Length: 123
Length: 213
Image (cartoon, rainbow over all chains, first blue to last red; front, side, top):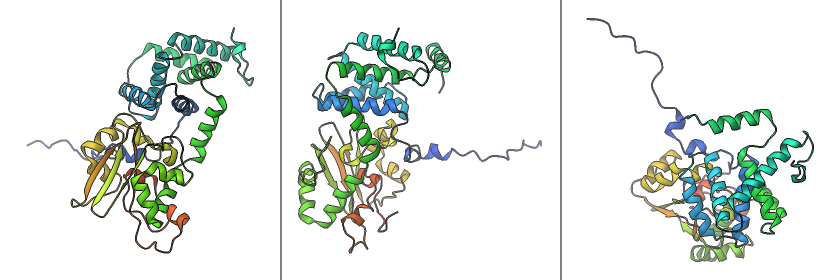
């Protein structure tokens, strides 16, 4: 009879986070980056301004979260897509947003470090 | 799970070689500047919102509501009947408190709140929802296996205690009125409020400690 290879070593146990996927996130910061707070703030200000209803917002966000990773980053990317889609149905087109995004990107690239970034600086 | 996305790789390279903000930050900036130009949002209101929700408004407001309900039976009756009005009476009305419903834990009932669609939450009095509340994992499991979710949060519920799961929506958001811990008879509203945890008002915490953490 041959000896079976040794199986000693690490016990095969799931990491604690896998056992407690929710509780392990209990202390996570609500916002990991400034844009996440800004995106949510814009959405809430637009609900309050009546640009779209709270229910439209919930429906749009609900659809968007299903398309993103189940993480804090994924959640706020969903906030952003939901916002863009609702605005595209209303006061802003996606082309306008894209153009403005590109203008900001040019402004950032044209602005020396340490100087305030102004849209007028976009070449 | 990782995958190769040439656009993402190109993005990463761009960010390494410039001081461009991350892509979502640029998109948010684009949207905000357009909305401000069109007069649809006030930049000061956006800044005030961020300041309030990242610093001022945590679950403390909700904790005060709970403490008041523990001390004042008439207020508690009003809270359970029309939470929006009760909260407004305390001067705490704000975003997402208009359609608020308070559900009461008892020795035989435990309440758990979820938003199965997205992340509807009475943030005007509880502050921003915790990360796990927005997770697909929670949204699915809170309904399918509420006792398992509670165990994960350290609440081992006796089988004799019924669990009610409430699905918050944009039009109706729930908060849990937890039970007052024994041994807190002499405490005033501030001292009681200090015992109330955010999770107890969502329902992932149940037996509050009679002493502040």
